[in-house]
Length: 334
Image (tube, rainbow, N blue to C red):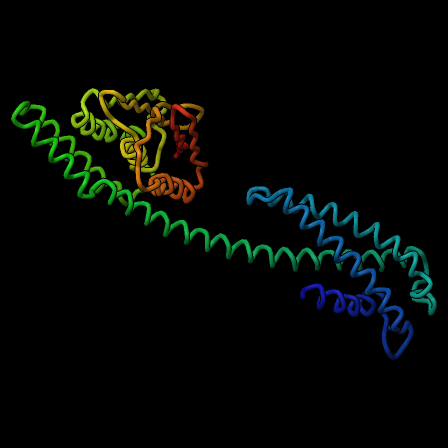
C-alpha cells in the first residue's frame, strides 16, 4: 500500500522539483520522462526497502539502533548513487532531448540530489512506521508484563498462604509442642518471620540476596522440622554475592517446587543445594519424581520468569538430566 502510493507520487514530484519540468513550458514533463522516473524511483525504493529489512534482521536489538541506522544509511547511500548513475545514463537521451541539462555536472547534481531525496524520504517513512510499531509493541509488552508481574506476585503470595501449607505447618507444630517446647517456639518464630517477609516484599520488584537467603533459611527450618533427616538443604553462597539483588520469593518458590514434585523419604532423601555460579544463583535438587496424576503446570517457574522479564535482567535457565533438576536465576546488580 505504501509503495503503491509513494512511488508514483515521488516519480511525479521529482521531475518538477529537481529538473524544473513543467506542463506548459520547456523542459516539458512528458509521459516518457514520468515513466523513466517511475522506473528509477521504484528500483531505488524497493532496493532500499530490502536493505532496511536486512539491517533490522542484522541488528534487531534496541541498543543496536544507532549501529543499525549508520550501517543501513551507508549502504543505502552507496546503492542509491550507483543505481541512479547507471539507470540515469540509460535515461539520458529522454531527459536531455529538450536541453534539460547544460553540462554533465549539472546533470549529476540534479539527478543524484533527486535520488538522495528519494532515499531520505524512504528512510523517514519506513523508520517512522517502524518506530511507531516498536513503540506500540513495547507499550503493549510492558503492560502485559506488568499484568503478569502482578499475577506472579499474587500467585507467590497464594502459594505460601494456601491452606495446605498452613495445615502442614500446624500439624508439625502440634507434634513438636509436647516433645520439644523449645523447638516449638523456634518453629513459631520462623513461621512468623516467613509471613512477615511475604507481606513486606509483596510490592517490591527486587530485594537483597542476603534478605532472601535469611528467609529461605527460615523456610528450610520449617520444612526440615517437618521432614527431619529426609530433607537436606545446603546454602553455599559467597559473601561478596550477598549484596546482589534477586526477585522476592523466588528461592522459596523453587524450594517448594522441589518438595512438591519429588519424593522425600528415609529411603529417598531429597537434597536441595543453593550456590552462586557465573553471575547467577543456582538452585538444584536430586531428581526423584513423584507419581503424580496431574502434570506440573509450571506456574512457579513462570512466576519467576515473568518477573525477571519485566526487569529485563537476563533469562531464567532450567536444565534437567536423569539425576538432577537445576534452575539458574540472574543476580541483579542494582
